[in-house]
Image (cartoon, rainbow, N blue to C red; front, side):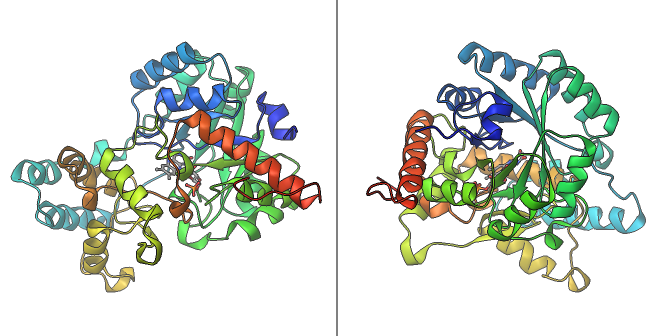
Length: 386
Ligand SMILES: Cc1cc2nc3c(=O)[nH]c(=O)nc-3n(C[C@H](O)[C@H](O)[C@H](O)COP(=O)(O)O)c2cc1C
């Protein structure tokens, strides 16, 4: 049975499934290529990568597959350069330098972080590499590039996919000229892609968001957020989505580059039952709300900064400054294998995470989806794991 949709036709893929870009290491060229070779669309999360590293990764993907794939970037946003921000940065530097079990070397790195460099985005140079390398699909989050930039991408033959957390943002992206829209629900792992309002003001759950976006725009809509198996995929197709984007579902795949301690924390959730720890939306790591497993770093920072900014003894500076300030801590945690100080991004479906090769996961997802669709059409017995 085919799962052809307007999205599969737009992207030239056989299954309406996209492996989410996951910046920070999980989406290795091996994962991206394995997903694309299996008939879905692999995506490289390149938001934190240097232009040279993106070029090398794209070339490696091309050595491993001749199928379409996506590269994802973070659209830069303006960061206030006022007294309030400067004092928040100074306070946070002082606080973080001594807030945990890291050594003096890490503390020094935090204290001497160059605030100016932290504000700068390499977006233009990154995008230039995508254009030069003729990347088939360009996806983005945290905003919308200028009309001129999108026009350049279109002329270069790229398919363009933007991220929305509200109907308003979906309409904005449609008017800007994208080819498809990711509707990111409240459940989603990682950062909120919201850009017209704050991430905390755009928190629609997927079941509410997808049909409203589908009704509002003419373009294919891609649902994202806690979709972990064929039941979730079939449900999103029933809501009118033309495809789905899954992140957490691929984090523990064989080809994933997730740190072993991160992978272990995710897999512990799949066996945790009633002692599972909740995922939370937090600004602690980056200054922008993102969903992940609660850990010591989040607890420490949230109990110090307070839930309401007005009452906070230490304020969290905006993204991407806070992200730069916590990088030495995350690098230290990676060297130490200490998951309590890593960003353990994960969606609300984390307990359903599975292991195995990306090809196996894709094959299971496709078989489960087809079985659910058959069952719903009264066409024989099945279950989510048939
Ligand atoms: C570890 C991780 C990193 C992510 N990084 C990115 C990213 O770089 N760019 C992006 O557009 N979305 C990113 N996301 C969000 C995904 O695109 C998607 O919205 C999310 O994974 C869907 O929820 P799920 O994880 O429950 O499947 C990330 C998600 C995770 C879990």
